[in-house]
Image 1 (cartoon, rainbow, N blue to C red):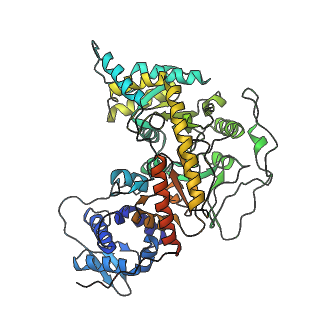
Image 2 (image 1 turned 45 degrees about the horizontal axis):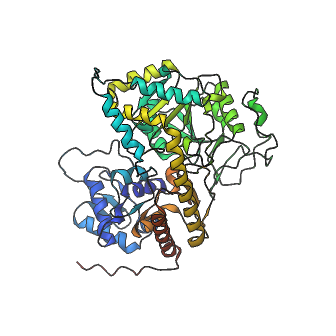
Image 3 (image 1 turned 180 degrees about the vertical axis):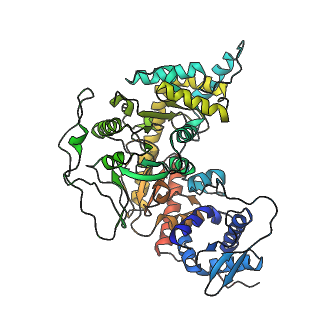
Amino acid sequence: MNGANTDHLVDLLGRWASGRGPLYLLLAARLRALIDDGVLHPGEPLPPDRVLAGRLAVGRGTVVAAYELLQREGRVLRRQGSGTRVAELDLPGPRTADGMTTNPLLLHILHPPDGAMLLTCAAPDEPPPELAEAYEEAAGRLAGMRDLGYQPAGQPDLCEAVAAYYRRRGLPTTAQEIIVTTGAQQALTLLAALLVSPGDRVLTESPTYPGALEVFRQAAASVRPVVLDPLARPEESPDESYPGESSLGESSLGEPSLGEPFDAGSLLPAAPAPVASGRRLAAIDLVQAARERAALLYTVPTASNPTGTIMDVRTRRRVAALTAEHDLPVIDDEVCAELCFDGDTPAPLAAYTPGKQVITVASLSKVVWGGLRIGWIRAPAPLVARLARLRAVHDLGGDVVSQLAATALLRRLDEIKHARLRVLRARHDHLCAELRARLPSWSFEPARGGQTIWVRLPRGDADSYAQVALRHGVAVPPGRSFDPLGGLADRMRLHFLFPRTELSAAVRALAAAWRAYDGVERPPSRPTLVV
Protein backbone atom coordinates (compact mmCIF):
# COMPACT_ATOMS: atom_id res chain seq x y z
CA MET A 1 0.00 0.00 0.00
CA ASN A 2 1.55 3.30 -1.05
CA GLY A 3 1.64 6.49 1.01
CA ALA A 4 -1.48 7.97 -0.57
CA ASN A 5 -3.50 4.83 0.21
CA THR A 6 -2.19 4.81 3.76
CA ASP A 7 -3.36 8.42 4.14
CA HIS A 8 -6.77 7.36 2.82
CA LEU A 9 -7.03 4.52 5.35
CA VAL A 10 -6.02 6.76 8.23
CA ASP A 11 -8.78 9.17 7.24
CA LEU A 12 -11.29 6.32 7.07
CA LEU A 13 -10.28 5.11 10.52
CA GLY A 14 -11.43 8.46 11.87
CA ARG A 15 -12.27 8.27 15.59
CA TRP A 16 -11.11 4.69 16.06
CA ALA A 17 -9.17 5.35 19.30
CA SER A 18 -11.83 7.38 21.13
CA GLY A 19 -13.70 4.46 22.74
CA ARG A 20 -12.96 2.39 25.82
CA GLY A 21 -10.75 -0.68 25.88
CA PRO A 22 -7.36 -1.81 24.56
CA LEU A 23 -6.20 0.05 21.47
CA TYR A 24 -5.77 -3.12 19.42
CA LEU A 25 -9.44 -4.01 19.97
CA LEU A 26 -10.56 -0.50 19.04
CA LEU A 27 -8.44 -0.58 15.88
CA ALA A 28 -9.70 -4.04 14.94
CA ALA A 29 -13.31 -2.93 15.48
CA ARG A 30 -12.96 0.02 13.11
CA LEU A 31 -11.17 -2.04 10.45
CA ARG A 32 -13.86 -4.72 10.82
CA ALA A 33 -16.58 -2.15 10.18
CA LEU A 34 -14.79 -0.80 7.09
CA ILE A 35 -14.41 -4.33 5.71
CA ASP A 36 -17.98 -5.38 6.48
CA ASP A 37 -19.41 -2.18 4.95
CA GLY A 38 -17.46 -2.74 1.74
CA VAL A 39 -15.35 0.37 2.14
CA LEU A 40 -12.23 -1.83 2.10
CA HIS A 41 -12.62 -4.20 -0.84
CA PRO A 42 -11.65 -7.89 -1.02
CA GLY A 43 -8.03 -8.23 -2.04
CA GLU A 44 -7.17 -4.65 -1.09
CA PRO A 45 -3.74 -4.41 0.57
CA LEU A 46 -3.47 -2.94 4.06
CA PRO A 47 -0.45 -0.94 5.21
CA PRO A 48 2.52 -2.80 6.71
CA ASP A 49 2.49 -3.08 10.48
CA ARG A 50 5.24 -0.53 11.08
CA VAL A 51 3.87 1.98 8.56
CA LEU A 52 0.37 2.00 10.01
CA ALA A 53 1.70 2.05 13.58
CA GLY A 54 3.77 5.11 12.74
CA ARG A 55 0.84 6.93 11.18
CA LEU A 56 -1.44 6.12 14.14
CA ALA A 57 1.25 6.88 16.73
CA VAL A 58 0.90 3.49 18.41
CA GLY A 59 3.27 0.60 18.99
CA ARG A 60 3.73 -1.95 16.22
CA GLY A 61 2.29 -4.60 18.54
CA THR A 62 -1.06 -2.80 18.53
CA VAL A 63 -1.37 -3.12 14.74
CA VAL A 64 -0.07 -6.70 14.73
CA ALA A 65 -2.61 -7.74 17.37
CA ALA A 66 -5.45 -6.05 15.46
CA TYR A 67 -4.46 -7.69 12.17
CA GLU A 68 -4.09 -11.10 13.81
CA LEU A 69 -7.52 -10.81 15.41
CA LEU A 70 -9.06 -9.98 12.04
CA GLN A 71 -7.15 -12.88 10.48
CA ARG A 72 -8.66 -15.29 12.99
CA GLU A 73 -12.08 -13.90 12.05
CA GLY A 74 -11.36 -14.54 8.38
CA ARG A 75 -11.49 -10.86 7.43
CA VAL A 76 -7.85 -10.43 6.42
CA LEU A 77 -5.11 -12.66 5.04
CA ARG A 78 -1.53 -12.33 6.28
CA ARG A 79 1.34 -14.01 4.47
CA GLN A 80 5.02 -13.40 4.99
CA GLY A 81 6.40 -11.58 1.99
CA SER A 82 2.94 -10.66 0.72
CA GLY A 83 1.75 -8.44 3.56
CA THR A 84 -1.84 -8.11 4.78
CA ARG A 85 -4.87 -8.04 2.49
CA VAL A 86 -8.63 -7.93 2.90
CA ALA A 87 -10.04 -11.44 2.55
CA GLU A 88 -12.86 -12.53 0.25
CA LEU A 89 -16.05 -12.44 2.34
CA ASP A 90 -19.57 -13.62 1.69
CA LEU A 91 -21.49 -10.88 3.46
CA PRO A 92 -25.20 -10.09 3.07
CA GLY A 93 -26.49 -6.85 1.61
CA PRO A 94 -24.94 -4.29 -0.71
CA ARG A 95 -21.26 -3.58 -0.15
CA THR A 96 -20.14 -0.31 -1.67
CA ALA A 97 -18.03 2.66 -0.70
CA ASP A 98 -19.69 5.04 -3.16
CA GLY A 99 -20.01 8.51 -1.63
CA MET A 100 -17.99 7.58 1.46
CA THR A 101 -16.35 10.69 2.87
CA THR A 102 -12.86 10.50 4.36
CA ASN A 103 -12.73 14.11 5.46
CA PRO A 104 -11.89 14.03 9.19
CA LEU A 105 -14.05 17.09 9.91
CA LEU A 106 -17.14 15.58 8.31
CA LEU A 107 -16.45 12.21 9.94
CA HIS A 108 -16.43 13.91 13.34
CA ILE A 109 -19.89 15.36 12.58
CA LEU A 110 -21.22 12.00 11.41
CA HIS A 111 -19.55 10.03 14.21
CA PRO A 112 -18.63 12.34 17.14
CA PRO A 113 -15.77 10.89 19.21
CA ASP A 114 -17.02 9.59 22.53
CA GLY A 115 -16.40 12.10 25.30
CA ALA A 116 -13.82 14.10 23.35
CA MET A 117 -13.61 17.88 23.19
CA LEU A 118 -14.28 18.70 19.55
CA LEU A 119 -11.84 21.25 18.17
CA THR A 120 -12.84 19.96 14.74
CA CYS A 121 -16.20 21.65 14.17
CA ALA A 122 -15.98 25.45 14.06
CA ALA A 123 -19.57 26.62 14.50
CA PRO A 124 -21.20 28.41 17.47
CA ASP A 125 -23.10 26.09 19.81
CA GLU A 126 -24.76 28.82 21.88
CA PRO A 127 -27.88 30.21 20.15
CA PRO A 128 -28.26 33.93 20.94
CA PRO A 129 -31.49 35.15 22.57
CA GLU A 130 -32.37 37.01 19.38
CA LEU A 131 -32.86 33.64 17.65
CA ALA A 132 -35.80 32.60 19.85
CA GLU A 133 -37.32 36.05 19.43
CA ALA A 134 -36.98 35.79 15.65
CA TYR A 135 -38.81 32.45 15.64
CA GLU A 136 -41.58 33.94 17.76
CA GLU A 137 -41.99 36.68 15.17
CA ALA A 138 -41.90 34.10 12.36
CA ALA A 139 -44.59 31.98 14.03
CA GLY A 140 -46.82 35.04 14.33
CA ARG A 141 -46.55 35.64 10.59
CA LEU A 142 -47.96 32.19 9.81
CA ALA A 143 -51.46 33.21 10.94
CA GLY A 144 -53.61 33.83 7.87
CA MET A 145 -50.85 32.84 5.41
CA ARG A 146 -51.98 31.27 2.11
CA ASP A 147 -48.86 29.76 0.57
CA LEU A 148 -47.75 26.22 -0.34
CA GLY A 149 -44.26 27.03 0.95
CA TYR A 150 -42.58 25.38 -2.05
CA GLN A 151 -40.07 28.07 -3.00
CA PRO A 152 -36.87 26.65 -4.53
CA ALA A 153 -35.33 30.13 -4.84
CA GLY A 154 -36.25 31.03 -1.28
CA GLN A 155 -38.95 32.89 0.64
CA PRO A 156 -39.40 36.25 -1.18
CA ASP A 157 -39.09 38.41 1.95
CA LEU A 158 -35.76 36.77 2.82
CA CYS A 159 -34.46 37.15 -0.73
CA GLU A 160 -35.24 40.87 -0.55
CA ALA A 161 -33.67 41.16 2.93
CA VAL A 162 -30.44 39.55 1.67
CA ALA A 163 -30.41 41.83 -1.38
CA ALA A 164 -30.85 44.85 0.90
CA TYR A 165 -27.94 43.59 3.04
CA TYR A 166 -25.64 43.72 0.01
CA ARG A 167 -26.94 47.11 -1.05
CA ARG A 168 -26.00 48.43 2.41
CA ARG A 169 -22.49 47.13 1.75
CA GLY A 170 -22.27 49.09 -1.50
CA LEU A 171 -23.10 46.24 -3.90
CA PRO A 172 -26.26 46.84 -5.98
CA THR A 173 -28.37 43.68 -5.73
CA THR A 174 -31.95 42.67 -6.51
CA ALA A 175 -34.00 39.84 -5.01
CA GLN A 176 -33.79 38.04 -8.36
CA GLU A 177 -30.02 37.76 -7.83
CA ILE A 178 -30.48 35.77 -4.59
CA ILE A 179 -31.25 32.11 -4.00
CA VAL A 180 -31.69 30.91 -0.41
CA THR A 181 -30.11 27.54 0.43
CA THR A 182 -29.99 25.12 3.34
CA GLY A 183 -26.70 26.52 4.61
CA ALA A 184 -23.60 27.46 2.64
CA GLN A 185 -22.65 23.81 2.18
CA GLN A 186 -25.72 23.25 0.01
CA ALA A 187 -24.87 26.45 -1.86
CA LEU A 188 -21.43 25.04 -2.75
CA THR A 189 -22.96 21.70 -3.73
CA LEU A 190 -25.47 23.35 -6.09
CA LEU A 191 -22.78 25.50 -7.69
CA ALA A 192 -20.45 22.55 -8.20
CA ALA A 193 -23.27 20.52 -9.76
CA LEU A 194 -24.04 23.33 -12.20
CA LEU A 195 -20.56 24.62 -13.03
CA VAL A 196 -18.20 21.64 -12.66
CA SER A 197 -18.04 18.56 -14.87
CA PRO A 198 -15.95 15.45 -14.11
CA GLY A 199 -12.29 16.16 -14.82
CA ASP A 200 -12.67 19.96 -14.71
CA ARG A 201 -9.99 21.92 -12.90
CA VAL A 202 -11.07 23.86 -9.82
CA LEU A 203 -8.68 26.35 -8.25
CA THR A 204 -8.49 26.99 -4.50
CA GLU A 205 -6.16 28.57 -2.02
CA SER A 206 -4.10 26.43 0.31
CA PRO A 207 -5.07 26.07 3.07
CA THR A 208 -8.78 26.39 2.46
CA TYR A 209 -12.16 25.26 3.79
CA PRO A 210 -12.20 21.43 3.67
CA GLY A 211 -15.97 21.24 3.18
CA ALA A 212 -15.50 22.92 -0.20
CA LEU A 213 -12.73 20.50 -1.15
CA GLU A 214 -15.06 17.62 -0.35
CA VAL A 215 -17.78 19.11 -2.59
CA PHE A 216 -15.38 19.53 -5.53
CA ARG A 217 -14.00 16.00 -5.11
CA GLN A 218 -17.52 14.60 -5.07
CA ALA A 219 -18.01 16.41 -8.39
CA ALA A 220 -14.95 14.50 -9.70
CA ALA A 221 -13.04 17.75 -10.25
CA SER A 222 -9.26 18.10 -10.34
CA VAL A 223 -8.57 20.51 -7.48
CA ARG A 224 -5.40 22.59 -7.78
CA PRO A 225 -3.96 25.06 -5.24
CA VAL A 226 -3.27 28.55 -6.52
CA VAL A 227 -1.43 31.59 -5.19
CA LEU A 228 -3.71 34.64 -5.32
CA ASP A 229 -1.18 37.20 -4.07
CA PRO A 230 2.30 36.89 -5.64
CA LEU A 231 3.74 39.28 -3.05
CA ALA A 232 2.70 37.12 -0.11
CA ARG A 233 4.53 33.93 0.73
CA PRO A 234 2.16 30.96 0.47
CA GLU A 235 1.90 28.15 2.98
CA GLU A 236 4.92 25.90 2.65
CA SER A 237 5.79 22.59 4.22
CA PRO A 238 9.34 21.24 4.30
CA ASP A 239 8.74 19.10 1.19
CA GLU A 240 6.83 21.70 -0.78
CA SER A 241 7.64 24.76 -2.83
CA TYR A 242 5.51 27.18 -4.78
CA PRO A 243 6.44 28.79 -8.08
CA GLY A 244 5.39 32.29 -8.87
CA GLU A 245 6.69 33.83 -5.66
CA SER A 246 7.82 37.41 -5.97
CA SER A 247 11.38 38.57 -5.48
CA LEU A 248 10.11 42.03 -4.61
CA GLY A 249 9.66 41.54 -0.88
CA GLU A 250 7.15 43.93 0.71
CA SER A 251 4.85 45.81 -1.62
CA SER A 252 5.42 49.52 -2.06
CA LEU A 253 2.35 49.97 -4.21
CA GLY A 254 -0.14 50.83 -1.48
CA GLU A 255 -3.87 50.15 -1.75
CA PRO A 256 -5.73 51.87 -4.59
CA SER A 257 -9.09 53.43 -3.87
CA LEU A 258 -12.18 51.55 -4.91
CA GLY A 259 -12.87 53.76 -7.90
CA GLU A 260 -9.42 53.69 -9.51
CA PRO A 261 -8.76 51.65 -12.67
CA PHE A 262 -6.68 48.58 -12.04
CA ASP A 263 -4.06 46.89 -14.21
CA ALA A 264 -3.76 43.22 -13.23
CA GLY A 265 -0.37 42.95 -14.88
CA SER A 266 1.09 45.67 -12.69
CA LEU A 267 1.12 43.32 -9.73
CA LEU A 268 2.74 40.34 -11.39
CA PRO A 269 6.04 39.14 -9.90
CA ALA A 270 9.11 40.11 -11.88
CA ALA A 271 10.28 36.49 -12.02
CA PRO A 272 9.47 33.24 -10.31
CA ALA A 273 11.48 32.44 -7.24
CA PRO A 274 13.89 29.53 -7.72
CA VAL A 275 12.54 26.14 -6.80
CA ALA A 276 14.76 23.93 -4.69
CA SER A 277 15.80 20.71 -6.37
CA GLY A 278 13.63 17.74 -5.46
CA ARG A 279 10.73 19.73 -4.05
CA ARG A 280 7.30 19.14 -5.51
CA LEU A 281 5.50 22.08 -7.06
CA ALA A 282 2.29 22.52 -5.10
CA ALA A 283 0.74 25.80 -6.26
CA ILE A 284 0.80 28.07 -9.29
CA ASP A 285 0.14 31.78 -9.61
CA LEU A 286 -3.38 32.87 -10.54
CA VAL A 287 -2.21 34.34 -13.85
CA GLN A 288 -0.90 31.00 -15.07
CA ALA A 289 -3.88 29.13 -13.64
CA ALA A 290 -6.42 31.45 -15.30
CA ARG A 291 -4.79 30.86 -18.68
CA GLU A 292 -5.27 27.11 -18.27
CA ARG A 293 -9.07 27.44 -18.49
CA ALA A 294 -10.19 26.24 -15.09
CA ALA A 295 -13.88 25.73 -14.38
CA LEU A 296 -13.88 28.06 -11.38
CA LEU A 297 -11.89 29.62 -8.54
CA TYR A 298 -12.96 29.19 -4.91
CA THR A 299 -11.64 31.62 -2.30
CA VAL A 300 -12.31 32.63 1.32
CA PRO A 301 -10.93 36.19 1.34
CA THR A 302 -12.53 37.51 4.53
CA ALA A 303 -11.86 35.95 7.95
CA SER A 304 -10.48 32.91 6.19
CA ASN A 305 -11.20 29.40 7.37
CA PRO A 306 -8.74 28.15 8.65
CA THR A 307 -6.19 30.98 8.97
CA GLY A 308 -8.36 33.90 10.16
CA THR A 309 -6.66 36.21 7.65
CA ILE A 310 -8.28 38.99 5.60
CA MET A 311 -7.32 39.59 1.98
CA ASP A 312 -6.15 43.15 1.31
CA VAL A 313 -7.74 45.50 -1.21
CA ARG A 314 -4.84 45.17 -3.68
CA THR A 315 -5.26 41.41 -3.91
CA ARG A 316 -9.04 41.66 -4.13
CA ARG A 317 -8.65 44.00 -7.11
CA ARG A 318 -6.12 41.65 -8.70
CA VAL A 319 -8.37 38.62 -8.35
CA ALA A 320 -11.41 40.50 -9.68
CA ALA A 321 -9.48 41.88 -12.66
CA LEU A 322 -7.83 38.61 -13.66
CA THR A 323 -10.98 36.55 -13.39
CA ALA A 324 -12.92 39.12 -15.42
CA GLU A 325 -10.18 39.16 -18.06
CA HIS A 326 -10.22 35.37 -18.40
CA ASP A 327 -13.98 34.93 -17.81
CA LEU A 328 -13.24 32.66 -14.85
CA PRO A 329 -16.15 32.15 -12.41
CA VAL A 330 -15.23 32.92 -8.80
CA ILE A 331 -16.94 31.71 -5.64
CA ASP A 332 -16.38 34.26 -2.87
CA ASP A 333 -17.11 32.41 0.39
CA GLU A 334 -18.24 35.05 2.89
CA VAL A 335 -19.56 32.72 5.59
CA CYS A 336 -17.30 34.32 8.23
CA ALA A 337 -17.16 37.80 6.67
CA GLU A 338 -19.14 39.45 9.48
CA LEU A 339 -16.64 38.18 12.06
CA CYS A 340 -13.77 40.60 11.39
CA PHE A 341 -12.36 41.57 14.79
CA ASP A 342 -12.12 45.27 13.95
CA GLY A 343 -15.86 45.26 13.22
CA ASP A 344 -15.34 46.49 9.64
CA THR A 345 -16.47 43.98 6.98
CA PRO A 346 -14.63 44.50 3.66
CA ALA A 347 -16.60 44.81 0.45
CA PRO A 348 -17.33 41.52 -1.36
CA LEU A 349 -15.19 40.62 -4.37
CA ALA A 350 -18.17 41.37 -6.62
CA ALA A 351 -17.88 45.05 -5.68
CA TYR A 352 -14.50 45.23 -7.43
CA THR A 353 -15.64 44.28 -10.92
CA PRO A 354 -18.53 45.23 -13.23
CA GLY A 355 -18.43 41.70 -14.68
CA LYS A 356 -20.68 38.79 -13.78
CA GLN A 357 -17.96 36.30 -12.87
CA VAL A 358 -18.10 36.67 -9.07
CA ILE A 359 -20.58 34.48 -7.16
CA THR A 360 -20.99 35.23 -3.46
CA VAL A 361 -21.88 32.55 -0.90
CA ALA A 362 -22.77 33.29 2.72
CA SER A 363 -24.88 32.05 5.63
CA LEU A 364 -26.01 32.83 9.17
CA SER A 365 -24.46 29.69 10.69
CA LYS A 366 -21.29 31.37 11.99
CA VAL A 367 -22.61 34.73 13.11
CA VAL A 368 -25.84 33.38 14.66
CA TRP A 369 -25.87 29.62 15.27
CA GLY A 370 -24.64 26.48 13.52
CA GLY A 371 -28.09 24.89 13.71
CA LEU A 372 -29.72 27.73 11.75
CA ARG A 373 -29.34 26.21 8.29
CA ILE A 374 -29.92 29.36 6.26
CA GLY A 375 -27.45 30.27 3.53
CA TRP A 376 -27.63 31.97 0.16
CA ILE A 377 -25.98 32.61 -3.16
CA ARG A 378 -25.70 36.03 -4.79
CA ALA A 379 -25.19 35.66 -8.54
CA PRO A 380 -26.47 37.02 -11.86
CA ALA A 381 -30.24 36.47 -12.18
CA PRO A 382 -29.97 33.94 -15.09
CA LEU A 383 -27.61 31.79 -13.01
CA VAL A 384 -29.91 32.04 -9.98
CA ALA A 385 -32.81 30.82 -12.13
CA ARG A 386 -30.76 27.82 -13.27
CA LEU A 387 -29.77 27.07 -9.66
CA ALA A 388 -33.42 27.22 -8.57
CA ARG A 389 -34.40 24.72 -11.28
CA LEU A 390 -31.58 22.41 -10.21
CA ARG A 391 -32.53 22.67 -6.55
CA ALA A 392 -36.18 21.90 -7.30
CA VAL A 393 -35.13 18.48 -8.59
CA HIS A 394 -33.70 17.57 -5.16
CA ASP A 395 -35.43 19.95 -2.75
CA LEU A 396 -38.64 21.91 -3.35
CA GLY A 397 -37.51 24.60 -0.94
CA GLY A 398 -36.17 25.28 2.51
CA ASP A 399 -38.04 25.56 5.79
CA VAL A 400 -40.27 28.63 5.52
CA VAL A 401 -40.43 29.36 9.26
CA SER A 402 -36.62 29.40 9.49
CA GLN A 403 -36.47 31.73 6.50
CA LEU A 404 -38.97 34.11 8.11
CA ALA A 405 -36.85 34.01 11.29
CA ALA A 406 -33.75 34.75 9.22
CA THR A 407 -35.49 37.79 7.74
CA ALA A 408 -36.01 39.13 11.26
CA LEU A 409 -32.42 38.32 12.23
CA LEU A 410 -30.98 40.25 9.29
CA ARG A 411 -32.68 43.40 10.62
CA ARG A 412 -30.72 42.90 13.86
CA LEU A 413 -27.51 41.66 12.29
CA ASP A 414 -25.29 44.47 13.59
CA GLU A 415 -26.52 43.94 17.14
CA ILE A 416 -25.96 40.18 16.97
CA LYS A 417 -22.60 40.55 15.25
CA HIS A 418 -21.10 42.94 17.80
CA ALA A 419 -22.18 40.69 20.69
CA ARG A 420 -20.57 37.68 18.97
CA LEU A 421 -17.37 39.60 18.23
CA ARG A 422 -16.92 40.64 21.86
CA VAL A 423 -17.05 36.99 22.90
CA LEU A 424 -14.91 35.74 20.03
CA ARG A 425 -12.14 38.30 20.54
CA ALA A 426 -11.89 37.46 24.25
CA ARG A 427 -11.79 33.72 23.60
CA HIS A 428 -9.29 34.14 20.77
CA ASP A 429 -6.95 36.08 23.03
CA HIS A 430 -7.38 33.51 25.79
CA LEU A 431 -6.53 30.59 23.48
CA CYS A 432 -3.46 32.38 22.14
CA ALA A 433 -2.25 33.08 25.69
CA GLU A 434 -2.79 29.47 26.74
CA LEU A 435 -0.90 28.15 23.71
CA ARG A 436 2.02 30.50 24.30
CA ALA A 437 2.20 29.45 27.96
CA ARG A 438 1.74 25.68 27.62
CA LEU A 439 2.99 24.95 24.08
CA PRO A 440 5.65 27.59 23.39
CA SER A 441 7.28 25.55 20.63
CA TRP A 442 4.14 25.71 18.49
CA SER A 443 3.91 28.66 16.10
CA PHE A 444 0.87 30.55 14.87
CA GLU A 445 -0.31 33.99 13.83
CA PRO A 446 -3.20 35.56 15.75
CA ALA A 447 -6.36 35.66 13.68
CA ARG A 448 -7.82 38.90 12.34
CA GLY A 449 -11.29 37.42 12.24
CA GLY A 450 -13.30 34.25 12.05
CA GLN A 451 -13.28 31.44 14.58
CA THR A 452 -9.99 29.60 14.07
CA ILE A 453 -6.22 29.88 14.16
CA TRP A 454 -3.70 27.97 12.07
CA VAL A 455 -0.96 26.24 14.05
CA ARG A 456 2.38 24.80 12.93
CA LEU A 457 4.05 21.98 14.82
CA PRO A 458 7.82 22.22 15.27
CA ARG A 459 8.33 18.55 14.39
CA GLY A 460 6.42 15.44 13.43
CA ASP A 461 3.13 15.48 11.56
CA ALA A 462 -0.34 16.56 12.62
CA ASP A 463 -2.02 13.32 11.53
CA SER A 464 -0.12 11.12 13.98
CA TYR A 465 -0.27 13.80 16.68
CA ALA A 466 -4.06 14.00 16.21
CA GLN A 467 -4.25 10.29 17.02
CA VAL A 468 -2.42 10.88 20.31
CA ALA A 469 -4.55 13.96 21.07
CA LEU A 470 -7.74 11.95 20.57
CA ARG A 471 -6.53 9.47 23.19
CA HIS A 472 -6.08 12.46 25.51
CA GLY A 473 -9.69 13.52 24.93
CA VAL A 474 -9.31 16.22 22.25
CA ALA A 475 -10.20 15.91 18.55
CA VAL A 476 -8.17 18.19 16.28
CA PRO A 477 -8.25 18.47 12.46
CA PRO A 478 -4.84 17.91 10.80
CA GLY A 479 -3.62 20.26 8.10
CA ARG A 480 -3.79 17.69 5.32
CA SER A 481 -7.58 18.10 5.31
CA PHE A 482 -7.21 21.76 4.30
CA ASP A 483 -4.84 21.30 1.35
CA PRO A 484 -6.07 20.20 -2.10
CA LEU A 485 -2.99 18.01 -2.58
CA GLY A 486 -2.87 16.60 0.94
CA GLY A 487 0.15 18.65 2.02
CA LEU A 488 0.64 20.88 5.08
CA ALA A 489 1.27 17.81 7.21
CA ASP A 490 2.79 19.89 10.03
CA ARG A 491 -0.26 22.17 10.42
CA MET A 492 -3.60 21.95 12.18
CA ARG A 493 -6.56 24.18 12.88
CA LEU A 494 -7.81 25.10 16.35
CA HIS A 495 -11.06 26.96 17.02
CA PHE A 496 -11.74 29.31 19.94
CA LEU A 497 -15.49 28.85 20.31
CA PHE A 498 -15.42 27.16 23.71
CA PRO A 499 -15.76 29.17 26.95
CA ARG A 500 -12.43 30.07 28.53
CA THR A 501 -12.44 27.23 31.07
CA GLU A 502 -13.03 24.67 28.33
CA LEU A 503 -10.35 26.22 26.12
CA SER A 504 -7.90 25.97 29.01
CA ALA A 505 -8.81 22.32 29.56
CA ALA A 506 -8.40 21.62 25.83
CA VAL A 507 -4.94 23.20 25.73
CA ARG A 508 -3.87 21.27 28.85
CA ALA A 509 -4.92 18.07 27.10
CA LEU A 510 -3.11 19.13 23.91
CA ALA A 511 0.02 19.84 25.93
CA ALA A 512 -0.16 16.43 27.62
CA ALA A 513 -0.63 14.80 24.21
CA TRP A 514 2.34 16.74 22.83
CA ARG A 515 4.57 15.58 25.69
CA ALA A 516 3.55 11.99 24.99
CA TYR A 517 3.99 12.44 21.24
CA ASP A 518 7.19 14.43 21.60
CA GLY A 519 8.87 11.71 23.60
CA VAL A 520 8.98 13.49 26.97
CA GLU A 521 6.51 10.94 28.32
CA ARG A 522 6.50 7.41 26.96
CA PRO A 523 3.30 5.39 27.30
CA PRO A 524 3.88 1.90 28.71
CA SER A 525 4.16 -0.77 26.07
CA ARG A 526 1.15 -3.05 25.62
CA PRO A 527 1.51 -6.43 27.34
CA THR A 528 1.82 -9.46 25.10
CA LEU A 529 -1.57 -10.57 23.87
CA VAL A 530 -2.68 -13.85 25.43
CA VAL A 531 -5.69 -15.52 23.82
